[in-house]
Structures are given as C-alpha cells and as structure tokens.
Length: 363
Ligand SMILES: [Fe+2]
Ligand SMILES: [Fe+2]
Image 1: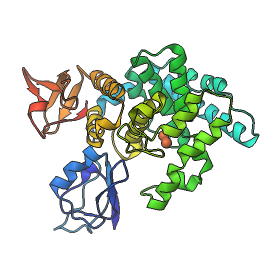
Image 2 (image 1 turned 90 degrees about the vertical axis):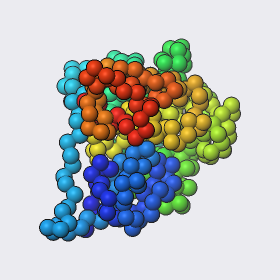
Image 3 (image 1 turned 45 degrees about the vertical axis):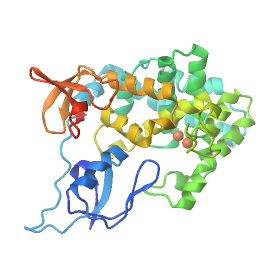
Image 4 (image 1 turned 180 degrees about the horizontal axis):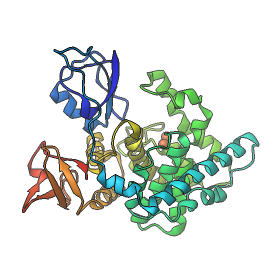
C-alpha cells in the first residue's frame, strides 16, 4: 500500500514509492530508496514537502505512520480571521473569474488583448491589498484556490506588484510589472491542459513541451499592441542570471528586468503552491530553498530586497524551533537571513551559530 506523507510525517525505514525531484525537476533520490534521517532532513531545503511512500501493513511490530501532526498555525489562523483577509478572498475570487473571462474572450473571439482593462479587472481590483509583506500572509492563506495557471498568474502579478513597490519603481512601472506577471505564462494556454495540470513528475519529453510555453507566449503577445516588456517577460521568465535557464540560456544583463522579477515571484509561488498537502510554508524555509538553488541565479538587488523584506516582516513574531523550544524572533542576520536571532525566556540564541537549529514554523 502506498500513501503520500508530509515531510514531517516521514520516518526512517520507509521506502519511497516514486522518484523524488527538487524544484528544478532534478532527481534527488530514486524510487525504492529506504529513507534515513539524513535523507529526510534534506527534503525541506530542496522544496520537497510530501513524498509517496510504501506504508507497511499495520501490525503490532510495525506501527503505521501517525496521522498528520498538528502544525501550529496560530499566526495564520489569526490572519484568516481578519476582515482584511475576508475582503481579499472575495476580491481574489472575482479577480480570477474576470481574468479567465477576459483571456477566454480574447482567445475564442480573437479580439485584441486589452491589457489596461485586464489589469483593472484583476490586479487593480486587489489594489486595497497592502503593498507590503502582509500580502504574502494573505496569499498563503488562500488554501482553497487551485493551482491553475490562472490563480498562479494572479499570484505572480501580486507578488511583482509588491516587489516593484519595494524597488521604488514608479506607478507606471509597477502597473507594467503586475501586467507582465499576469501574462507571463499565457503560452501555457496553447499547450494540452492535461499536461499543464498533470500531478506528479513530468517525463523529460513532457518537460521539453512545457518549456515551449515561453516562446509560445512571446509569439502570442508579439501580435498584440502592447508594451514589448510584456512580450519579453513571457519569453525570458525562466532564464537565470548564470545562464542556466531556458529557452535562450542568456545571462543577467541580457535578461529583461521584469522577467528577472517574475523569476523570483514564480519560484516563490511554486514553493507555496499545493498548500493542501502541508501547513503554511515557514518564510525562513523560503530563504533556504532559494539559497540552495543558488542566489547567483537571480538578480542580486531583486533577490536580496525580496528575501530581506519577506523575513523582516516576521521580527517580533513568536516561532517554534526545530528542538521544540518556543521563542520570539528579535533580529534578522543580514549575512544569514534564514537563521535569525531568537529570544527564549531571558536569553537570545543566534541561530546562525547553531547549525541544524532552525525556525520550523511561526506560531
Ligand atoms: Fe512559466
Ligand atoms: Fe509561472
């Protein structure tokens, strides 16, 4: 019998029932591997949040893994109960519907894309959304939205909007960044939807097909009367500053600025997607995942501003450490963003000096 378990539910001795991949679709461990503590501990830094495993039949000698443990979500439960979140949820759902209707109309009746009205009916609808990190809390709590291209595009647009604000861009540039986010994956509408929504791992051939959404999106947008940055953002948002991206394998200076912004928003949204399988993602894990992938892949100004702003929101927040102790985040280490200084009782612990000790959740 197989069962999909959260990383936190895995125990040494279980055997994987599928190949396990990182966020970049690189194989971490093959199917049939016996899990050890060392392997399990690497999953979270690779962005692996659940794994299909063979579950032994329940006998006295081999107890089955326990049901999902309660992940402390007090911080997020608080967010979900605010009037601000309830309004956001309502506007978000209306925004997705408007976005779908707009694109469908443009595709089926072959009418030109009116990006101004697309922006106004979706992102501008959410203009009441705070232009700071609270927006990330609101997004993280949208657990019941599916991970469709539509929801993902709106998320990326909202994240780009906040990043543009953090980068002190003008109002027009902020609107452009949001619109680039809204349309970055438009090429996916030209691909078979079974492939786009396929759960689990893609075959190498399927991954090659998915990669085409960049060029397809560029070609679709090129025929519209829109800002060329929007076309380039669709073409280049999977490029990486060290040349390791696709489709052109170009490097930092050649990559469109808005595409570099989307690269970060895109990875962040992928990390926080599929929230139904696990509790809210700890923001300090986000840093770990980006660092592991290599910060050199991203524009230095953009990635440092993004990560610093995201973690700084949580100063003064109560947290749970990996050793079970509870404390309060009092200071963020600029040299090691994932490991802040935490106050426990009357003493402070600098997590950057204690390898292996980390913030596992906000409470
Ligand atoms: Fe994409
Ligand atoms: Fe995307």
